[in-house]
Image (tube, rainbow, N blue to C red; front, side):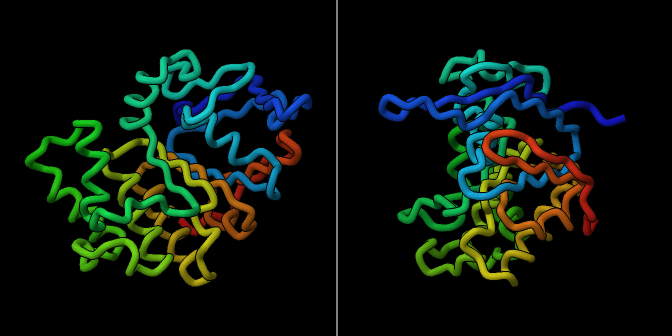
Length: 233
């Protein structure tokens, strides 16, 4: 029986814009099990990125609770959240967010150095292993600027795996990729899911539902539908 990994209970998020109170999320309740592969789908402005940010502790809910592996993360201090996130969550973003002045392998080593989970003598070999795993081991000493978009995203995925987190959250990871590279990235996430990672991908691309165990649809800050996906697993 699968254990619950992420639970959102009655989560709402309000933003103050001038004199207007904007509701980005309204009374969201979601349960994600260990080993799930979730696609969070919705149009631009639907609230899906806000929801992912709250799950990762980047943002906090206006009301409600976010529990991850038994810890109510919205009750943690900023310092506790940084430490917790480094251990538990691998984040992948649409615009890669690689550090341009570091080589590919140095980008992978950085989160290991920051969190101190991986022993120092093992970090270089782990970084090489991860780059090989995503198919770009030969790019280790290059700088991000000369990589293609698909290669940059694979580096970003390898970086998200640096500390071997149990959960991977990806926000529009194929938004800047062509269809061929998008498919490669989706297939890579599917392989990681088969290896036991719990994964949520935020996307406007409905084809992600072919890879997911469940697709969740969000509209105007409200969950409208949850369906089981096709899964290429």
